[in-house]
Length: 405
Ligand SMILES: Nc1ncnc2c1ncn2[C@@H]1O[C@H](COP(=O)(O)OP(=O)(O)OP(=O)(O)O)[C@@H](O)[C@H]1O
Image (cartoon, rainbow, N blue to C red; front, top):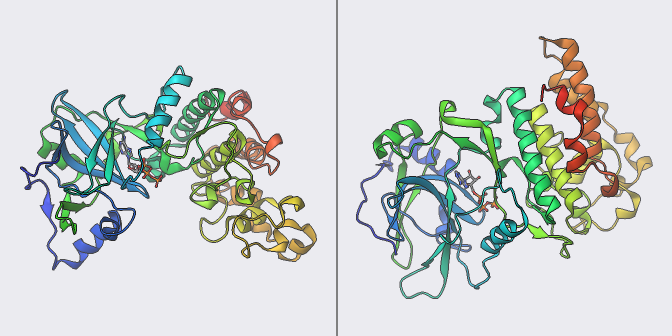
């Protein structure tokens, strides 16, 4: 049950300071989603949930949750509380999947699972009929998305290898993740459990907050998330998180993955997710770690970017695009595409541009680029049956060897 005894944590944002308000609104979750579906649960810094988790700061948010840093006063450890959006049915998809993973995967290292039997529910409003589910996770650091830029190439590829090992264990156990992207891979954080809250705030930035009150009378804070300093990010230990869309194989439904640019092209054409479609998304992560960005734009219809970088999609996919009326005939027809081919958008050119001017160890870098391109082409193979598997890539000594791994 939520209590409101401590309301003085963090600093209220002065509503007349436009810069501070803009900064908060740009970096926090959309305020409106506390007032309209899918309804985030309002939380104040200083609330204690389930008589043990004292909310200290905000960690982030997704489409379906807000995630808070809390101190477990029973065990004296810091945890992350993932508070999902309003649940109307009893099916606990994410919790059930965590149990399934525990049952099927012997070694769950690098898979970020909620503490077993620790999740609980919060009534969505006094006397209301919905509820919000809370999962208690070990505290981790920022995602690869926000910290790969401070990582050396060796650290990036070591992270990619750990991620692939974790993914292979999932795949061997008959589970596909279905939502792989660089925001769902978290780095470690130097433990802060024993520090006083004020010292944590000095390290992670003080929480800047705006008060909000939902129509049912619950109070909450819109809070700017923590900024973990590079000195406290542990890039040697990464975790794959967010199993909200994970499923056991064979998967029967064919919904595409959230951000289209990370989604395997066959899934965008009505085919169900498979281990191979995870490997496409994994290859996107690999490409981003090496190039610094995806080889195609994250905006617009994803196949447009795929065909510019990799050539036309299989002809038999024409007419199956998941957004009827948005597909273009040239995506599936080399002859129609030819007049628009832009050599500088093709994968080899993108790689050369991104890594071609690395001055030190020029020859080694060229060799690395050749090997990376070979692997990316196997991962970005349109034919899912011929796409590289996690086991094949892990066994590719030449690839890991060029990064000293
Ligand atoms: N254990 C954790 N430790 C630290 N930060 C975390 C933790 N879990 C999640 N986060 C932060 O919260 C963000 C949202 O978490 P998550 O992706 O699980 O939410 P979601 O609602 O399922 O997201 P999506 O809409 O992408 O599916 C993450 O990107 C990450 O920054």
